[in-house]
Image 1 (tube, helix red, strand yellow):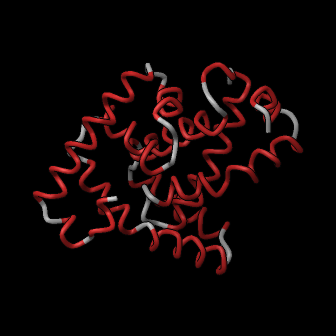
Image 2 (cartoon, rainbow, N blue to C red; image 1 turned 45 degrees about the vertical axis):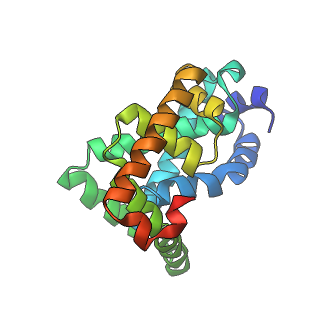
Length: 190
């Protein structure tokens, strides 16, 4: 999909289908690295695309690539869920997710979550970073965006993104070494 076509996902189901198929795996991976419940992960993945449909008319190609824009939407959706993680919302999400998932869907989502277990160890270490540093690190190191694309997704200057990324990497390395996580999970050092 070309960037100038992205606003069409709000009104054209065929354009949305192309967009969805192109990005669903990346969004599922983004969510699975941040959520431990397969039902909630499935709900949040759907919420990301619903939010993208709502926000599509305001997309500007000059702000960054569609993938970077979508990761910004996904990040906002996940953070909104964390902020409103009240008892009623969690209970409703679990009930709705179970009705929407078949056994094979649940097994695939559980496999994705299990595969992302090391990423969750890394996220435990990320809690020591500032919000800005963590956001840039997540988008570049875990979601394969360039620092420039991460800057576009976060609405910050690319130089600021590179500085935050450098600080995040240094702090994260210190934290992982001090806690012995790198000693028990050498693959995280990469």
